[in-house]
Image 1: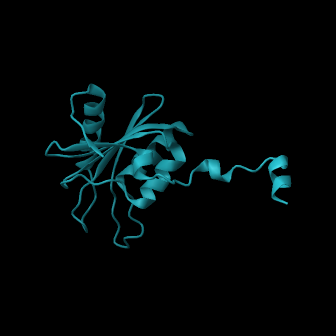
Image 2 (image 1 turned 180 degrees about the vertical axis):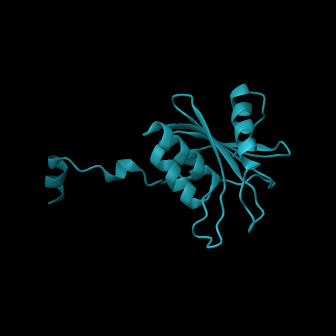
Length: 150
């Protein structure tokens, strides 16, 4: 991970969207408010916040909420960038379940991890999740590939 600055307007725009979503977090159990914003390859931004549940297992992270909103409005999407905003120092990365969902919609993305103190780190998705299981793993082999396995 490398440290980044908010100099670039596109990064600031993602940060502001994630920060706005963070304020709407429903986190009565952990008290940890998380906001996320994604930018699709079409340039559209979607945000989300974490939504906790008393059963814990039904809790949904901010990253997945943002992705689900994008899919529900656009259908199939490709991610370009993801911003996660927390209060933590250093800023938190996406959890394992979120990493798997992110991999479904793009492994060639840039991640920004930030907090409200102005700390921001940047990483490629492949740095964070180098061996991601993605849709390419489920493609059916061609007949010639099947014959080579016999």
